[in-house]
Length: 282
Image (cartoon, rainbow, N blue to C red; front, side, top):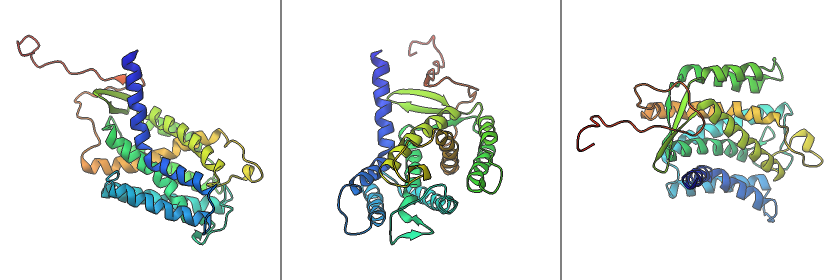
C-alpha cells in the first residue's frame, strides 16, 4: 500500500507538471476576472499568454520544437473557434481589439495548452506506443475534426466516429514511466481520461468567463456531460499530431519485440529475465 500511494503521488506530480502551461493560463483567467485592467480583458489575456510562452521557453520548460508543435495547435484551434462561434455553439461576449470573426486571439492558447500537456506528458512520462496504427488513427482523428466543424450542415457522426476510434486504437498500449517503474495503459482509456479532465477544466474555464455557452448567458450552469465525450474525441486530434512528430524523432514505438495486445489500467510491465539466470553474475 505504501508503494502504491507513493507511485500515485509521483504520477500526480508528473501530471501536474505536464499541465503547467494550462495551470498558468487558468491563473491568468482567475486574476483577470478580479483585477482591474487598463485594456479589455481578452486583450490582456493575449499579452499574458504570449508572456507565459516566452517564460516557458526561457526556463526551458518547452523546447523550440515543442513550441512549433504547440503553435500548430494554436492555429488549428483558432480555425475551429471561428467556425463554431459563427455557428453559435458558444460565444465570447466581452469586447476586445484582438477579435477576428468574434473570436479573441487568446483563445488559440487554450488549444495550445492541450498541445503543451500532450508534449510535456510524452517527455516527462517517457511515453512509447505498442501496436499503434498511425495512419488509421490519424484518418479517424481527421474525420472527427471535420465532423465537429460540419455537424451543423451535415449529419452528426460523433457516435459512429467514437466506435471507429475505439476500433482504430484497439490493442494500442501506452507505456509510461513513474519513478523507477514502467506501466502500461490502453490508448483508448488514456484518451477517455484526458477527455474527462478537459471537461472538468472546461467547467472551470466557463465559470471564469473564458467563453460562454448559450445556456450560460444569464447564469453559469454546468457544461453538459455530453461535452465529456466530445473532448475525448477531440483530444485524439491533438494526440495524433504529437505522435506524428514523435515518429519523426524516433520516439513513438516501444522497442518490445512482442507487444501485448491488451493491458489493464496502470498494469506494471514485468521486467525482462536475465539472459542467463543460472550464471553467478545473474
